[in-house]
Picture 1 (tube, rainbow, N blue to C red):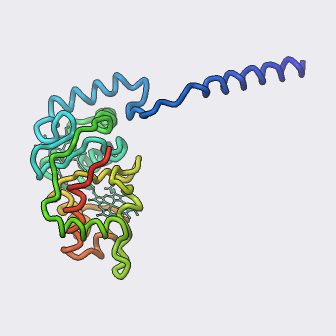
Picture 2 (picture 1 turned 90 degrees about the horizontal axis):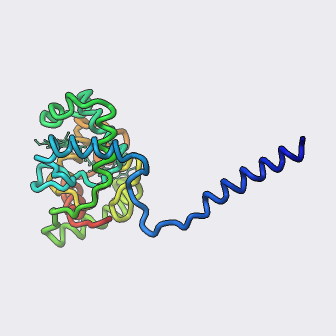
Picture 3 (picture 1 turned 30 degrees about the horizontal axis):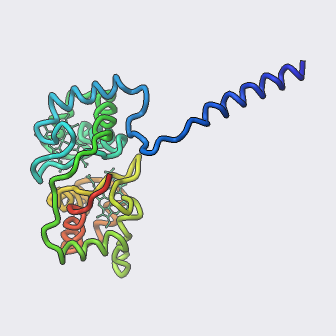
Length: 216
Ligand code: HEC
Ligand code: HEC
């Protein structure tokens, strides 16, 4: 009896081990397998509603509308829920999400996370962007401003699930977001504390640098 049990366990173990010997793909896809239907739902809503401002691929044409391509799926879904509950205030976005269900928000998050278009934003002022790069990589120690890279990643790609992508974001949008955090209009414990210590010139410089960053 014992031997049969051991043989069975060994068989299961070797099956599990076997399942893991598939060679790893060079470039892991962002799409979670088996989510094709959810992705299709996300694409459908994106094409019907969001496309006007964020583009079908999450790349916006104008600086007032943020790029959302490649943003962590959970981050997108969370922001949509915050707009819906009015914990994050923006008249346009609050009306956009009014009729979205939780499943729609999940679908939109997964769909836009899977997009990888190139941003239209650029850094125009080289000296300003260089000052911003210093803040991004090393913070401002005398003001206790931490390096942005610590949470948003060295290349600004963001870190799923909670740290949004910053690379290639429009300067105007990033600046607005930092100001909204520092005034407390937009709530997040970490970002309110950090932006509260930033001077206007720090915000401007780092936003300029971020606009020119490129990351997968
Ligand atoms: C009429 C233009 C417009 C449409 C249509 C629109 N948005 Fe937005 N969206 C905006 C603007 C403007 C902001 C920036 C709000 C702010 O500053 O807080 C925004 C912000 C967002 C954010 C937060 C981005 C971030 O980095 O935190 C997400 C996510 C988002 N939109 C997703 C969507 C989705 C999904 C749809 C479709 C259901 C959609 N939007 C439709 C204009 C639009
Ligand atoms: C301790 C971690 C941490 C550090 C360090 C950090 N951030 Fe953040 N940041 C966050 C989190 C978490 C969010 C998401 C907040 C939310 O959910 O609304 C965020 C959001 C943001 C946003 C809003 C993005 C969007 O798409 O709306 C901007 C802009 C931003 N951070 C800029 C910065 C800059 C610039 C620095 C460096 C000066 C920095 N952050 C440092 C954690 C951090």
